[in-house]
Length: 223
Image 1 (cartoon, rainbow, N blue to C red):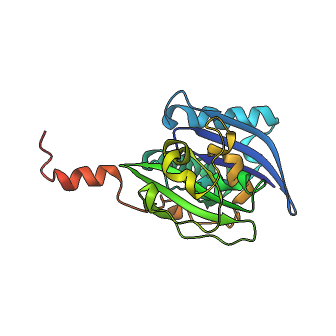
Image 2 (cartoon, one colour; image 1 turned 180 degrees about the vertical axis):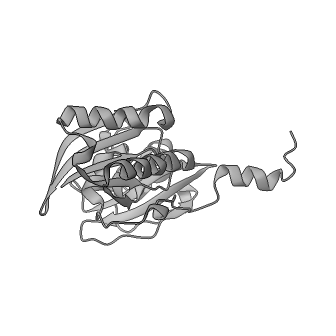
């Protein structure tokens, strides 16, 4: 079965086409774009990945979408795009956590990984994972408030931004390491591919979106 994975929950729009055969997952193409927003880049990236692999949308059996935590606008764009592609192709939908996708490549190197995404407002979205299948809940806290088990490998743009606060908790790769990037390939590696209904493709709400916070602070819409 061909899997088309999409993620726009970080500043990087990323698409991967993979083949799942039994327990194996073969990556056929990966496209990542950082130059513009997901509304401009996601569909072209989908077409580029299909072209690289020499496949078409009708051959895709599953659409796997990253649902955060992360940028709510990007998550919604990815979900809406996946719904539209599903309607056009008949492919089933699946979803996966952005933090699980971030941790997946790192778990090939280390038994314990702390995935950390910059949540703005001085906070991070974070989750600890182990190769034995254990995982913590998702946290949204100031970096100093994290207390991971053991001494994990710490990855993600939150790890690079708050390196000083997080380095006592575990080893952090250099800032230019690919382990700090969320990729659609990470979703392919970590997603369980269970089919979900279209309405289930909603962001993981660890806290209120920024737009809701601004509305609460300014309920009358005053400038």
